[in-house]
Length: 309
Length: 309
Image (cartoon, rainbow over all chains, first blue to last red; front, side, top):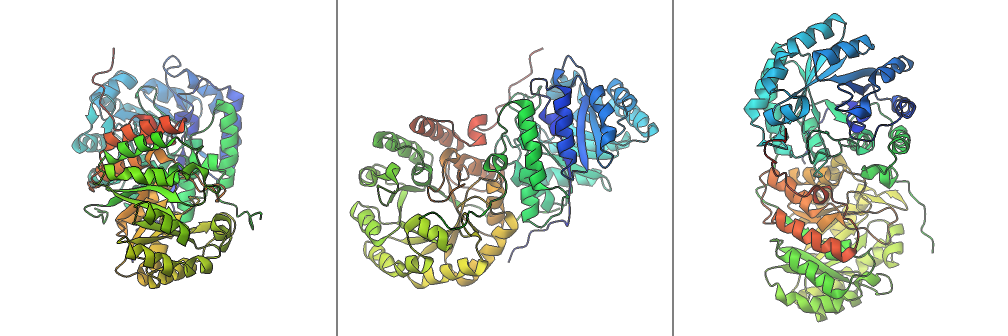
């Protein structure tokens, strides 16, 4: 009998307030804070609160400072923010968020579209961003965008992504995350890249960030977990997408990932019913139906009792 | 480095014309035949064409005889039909379809809602249905509905489903299929049930039939494939649902399954672009958007070339 190699527990990072909201019409800050409160109540221990990027490029997250100011209300959560530059890191730290994600695109074309820089130019900033992050007492994770595929250039060579992983660590990154930015990868490719990155990042946490654009996101998560990954990004309701990656769509839904984990006996510390409640708050905030199948199905099955005659 | 245990090839049975259409408003027969033609053109070698059940219970498939009459146009496909009674089997065979699927619910409550019979009462008919199927030169597969969970009664005991599997084979079934009727199972439960059924069905093909109601359908398919399953049901566009299982929703989408298999180097013989074309025909036939994420994303990524400045 086959038994899947599965860990006892995994850690989910909720990215809905950042990756989920960044492509939405701007949501009032008060509605965002209601969403954060609902997410914090689920038991999620890591939440990406916002990003400190250009308000012109991502108007939906222009209120990053106001959001950051409110986070002290939920000290049980490790809050983080995404940055794309030294200036963004300085802004985040000044606003009180010291655990940062810094994005480097493995694809030159996506890097130029996303932040106006080549991979090498983004990598060159890592040292300085790591230094100021560490001086503030925080940690720096490098998220490698288009780690598998680029919307402009097609497949990314495994060696290219692995090189960025190696150089990110050499430049001071404390952890890595592999981003399937346009939701194209599949389980065997997940394992192949994880193996290559694992070789150059021995001893460092390597997480995964999947989109469900082609329906394979949760299967990719299962494969990654089988390969030993214990850090996974997910977004409440399956919101998400990159404004600078045409064809990107929702992240894997946090509630679908938790349902999978619960069913497999893997602890996440996250309450599924709480996530559905947070989904309702999120749906009101964004003003349209959420893509998550589980959310639309109403969560776990609740046996109806004998059918009507 | 982890390598997934994966087969060289799998066989997909397209169930859209039956499971997909049965909960839709009735589609004109001509539109169904356009859908079958488009599906046959994809390379799918097994397609469930319709079901021979009460037209009152399932009005959408009341034209089973007319559909069956047309199937000789596509001799490269192994066509099958679902039946729920001896009378249905006789109708299917008279209409020229000799490969039959007979449904037995593992749950008493679902069996009563679905066909007005207990599991034992359904099992008692298997012998006769197998005999008339074999006399016509066909094969009989027993699909065990609510193999994991019942919408009325909750979880189905593994031993209950395994008992039905054993007795189905003893009564003449040539193959089995495990149905996750309301889309609730998860990978470890998939493996647990497959192991138990494999023990009592040694040497018989055991397929799987997953719904994606809670977002885990493709991950369940991946787990089943890892466990050695090579017969999988899927529905074009992710249509589907049981009219007598409240909360059921779409089957796993054929194009998402093929995308997963292609990405993993597993042959299915099915052309993904052909499936998207069949999806377009299906969407016109049913008159509403299909649930499949891959269909909505437009299929495989097509690199856009350098972004506009």
